[in-house]
Length: 242
Image: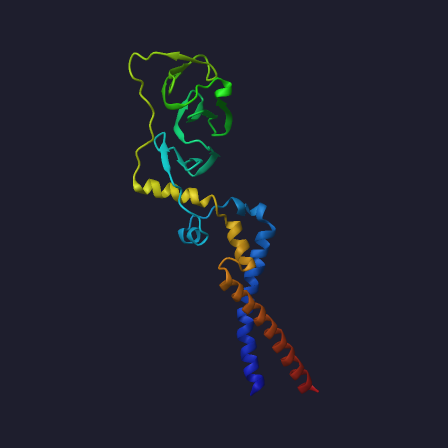
């Protein structure tokens, strides 16, 4: 009777332990090849997981250039791709010649047509300071600053103070709806949580805090009982054959 119940317990624990060990083996293999699988580059967008990890919404979100770009707090995105971090508030993002320009009050960032960083121009390079707005007309760029209007000459490193006959058409953020804002928030938050982190925490048992640690302890106990019961059954079977 005891051996029959022990065999039933052994079978159930074997199924439970096998599933747990398969998960640990698969997750372990994935972590051993995280670069090959690019797990660190796969961002998590699941709202429950983001909330579970305490990733918060950005304070401010603005879209530019007909929704092609958006800025969430200090991070600048092109569609879903993170381009760079810009500590100063972004005034405008627009196309200029063969470049995309990102303008803040004291810095002008140039990106090429593939959205790679080309250069950053500051007041040390001749850029006017305290910029509040920008207007682009063909090959001319006009900046509105606390010292008046400035227009570029042959390139973006030389600027001349001008008097505008008519008020320039200043670039402004793109009007968006709540769905656009929520989409930007999700993309922003996903930068702080990767699939690699999820698998690592699940593999180690930290993903659900103390509850997951307790669960991993139960798996360890199950494996111990499985091993002892298997050994006991084998010994009883070996003795019975004598």
